[in-house]
Image (cartoon, rainbow, N blue to C red):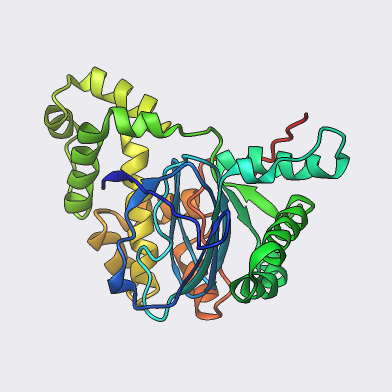
Length: 301
């Protein structure tokens, strides 16, 4: 896994960028990246993986996420299948300057501050906002800008959301340790289905075992063991969505004990594997790999 800087160029005669992605997912690189622009991603329908900051989880039935400036994230077509369609808005905070006396703008300022944690809006919010996002594709000039303000204002009044991270991930954490983390992540990607020796990974990072544990926890906010388990559970969710059996998913994702797999699955998703399969078949499950209970921060100005 690599993290790259993405240069965002506003649309012609516009102060921000609107993207409508509906091409085959093979035509895009859904890599981990960052940019100064704040980003609102609306996946119209379908399944995939959201990776924002430290957070990584699967989504179904589309998604709506607001990502703050310079927060590393992957494209939402990651682990998706065709057809995949999404609308993306990318804008700099500077284009949203308001007078100090503008009381109504405070909720938008709060929203943008919270976006540094990654904001996942619930499906009913996405359903309400989708017509306005589609209208954005047809609008031009000042009407388009006013529509952006309207969308942000409506989202700022919404309470149906979750913060994806408990701490803000500065892009510098990744960029400063880029090569070392890439080597570690790539190793896990290639060996998650086997037993992983943490001492071997520490040697790969050219660190002693205690130094490696401290480094990884500081860089990612979770232990290496937790990272591996979360990665494996994500892979298991994707396999279950392909009608694989629970035991098959367990062993193919590196869990040698189905009982332990069931316990880890419940810990990180809040559901048993059987519940996940049953709910997924009815297309109404949204799987989040959890690290803590739902938290909502309040920012005041």
